[in-house]
Image 1 (cartoon, helix red, strand yellow):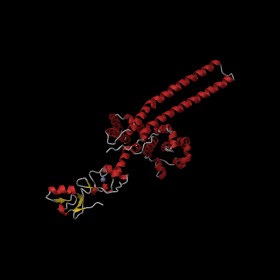
Image 2 (tube, helix red, strand yellow):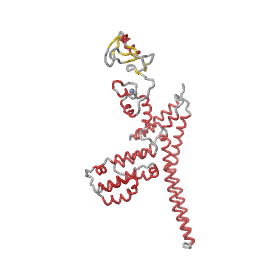
Image 3 (cartoon, helix red, strand yellow):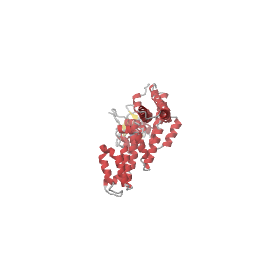
Image 4 (cartoon, helix red, strand yellow):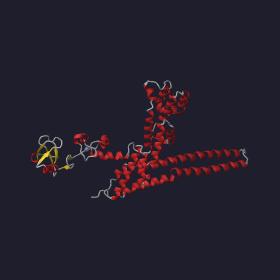
Length: 399
Ligand SMILES: [Zn+2]
């Protein structure tokens, strides 16, 4: 039997894979575009100025040609610098990364069978990518880099993005907002579009730190410069911040004690990470987990969480995977499948279940037959040690 791979299902997980380099490229393109616009604006002003002066005869010919030369020089510099930046920072490598990723996605569409070696190879690469993603998200950057290098998938995983995340987060952990604020300013438009308040939170924290050091005049100036502009959406927090100046960090008064709480820095780390995931269209949980949830949901049964009824062959019964499956729904079985605890095999009409006469525990016919064969026809329930002759067992009918 050949089954073609479920392309639609596969692609559901792959959006961020294609989007991350695209967003990266777009960002660099925007920054370059802005620089060019700014330079062109300056040139236009200079040109208009020169024309006006020439018309009124306020400029000598020599000075005018000097000014034109300076403008030409500026244009040359601009094209060399901006286009060079675009090439160097993100241009060629990002385009290659994009091409490589899209080609990989396209290649799975030509795979004929989910059982073919081509698909196995494709799925192996995907697993390597997801393992790297998991390692990157869990702060195991060296492991991630080693894995990516060993498998030759450096362009297929987001090593650079997570380097940036680590750099900003390390600064936040050292109680510096500067790096995170720089990131916000690079992504100002995108953050505003999704109404992300990270920048306000960072500004508020810098204000709190001034209040903590009792630099009250500086704090007031900072508030005017950086907080007031958020008045429309954050008026309550801004009012609270103003009142904070009246309290020292030793205050026991609830709202102000909470503002001075150093745990706010940990929240900033969290908020930053959510914001950068959001802009990169990365899910908040590792892709590996998302893929596993789907599988776990198809296996999970209430019995997986009861010590007595755990099945050695069931992944959800494993304590670690069971924890991961905590939030996924139970599987829905139209027909019940009963698995023998002794043999781990599915019981059906050929290998039907047999119950012990007193305690009613059920095992498969095959397993009990094997047990009876080596014990002169006697069988013992492994859970209660009840013993009886094989012929005393009752047949159980599956409905
Ligand atoms: Zn289970």
